[in-house]
Length: 224
Image 1 (cartoon, rainbow, N blue to C red):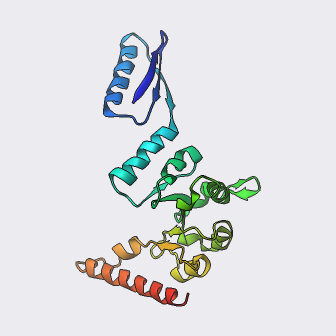
Image 2 (cartoon, helix red, strand yellow):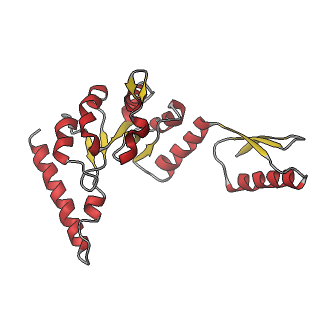
Image 3 (cartoon, helix red, strand yellow):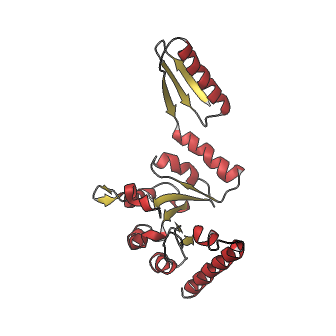
C-alpha cells in the first residue's frame, strides 16, 4: 500500500510502501511516472522507502496462516527485521540460507568478514535473534568439509541439506558430520531422483532411487 506520496516540481516522485505493493499501487506509480514524462522530463527519479519489517510480517502471515505452510526458506542478508516476523510463528520453521550446495555458493558465503567466513557470521548472528529456536539452516551436502565447524556453532538446530546425488554430495559423509542425537538433518535429493532414468520408465527409476536413499538413511539412523 502506497502512503505519503510526494511529487516534486522537478523530475522526482517519492513514496513509501507499507505492508505490500499491490496491483493498485503499481497502477498509481505508473500514473505518477507518466505524468512526469508528459510534463516534459526526459528521465524521472523514483524514491522509494520500504518498511521491511511490516512487509515481512505480511509475507509470513501469507505463508504460515493463509497458505498453511510448515516452513519457508529466506535469505539472511537484510538482517533481523526481515526474518524475525517469520520466527514469531510457533510450530513453523524458517529455513535460513547459510552455505548452499551450488558451485558458486562460496563466491560470497565464503568471503572473510571480521576474520571469519561470512556463512559463519550469518550463523552466529542468526542464533541471537528472537525465537531462533524456530530456525533451520540450509547447508549443502557438497560442503561436507564445513559441517564440523557449523555444528560447533549450531549444535542442535536442524539443517536442510540439498545436494545429495547429482550435485555430488555423499549421504554417509553428511550424516557422519551433521547428525545429532535428534537426527538434526533434513536430506534433500532432487535431480538424483528425478533424473535417475532417462527413458519411458523414468518414474519407476525415480521411485527406486528414492527408496534406495531412504533405505540408506534407515541404516544410518538405526545406529544412533
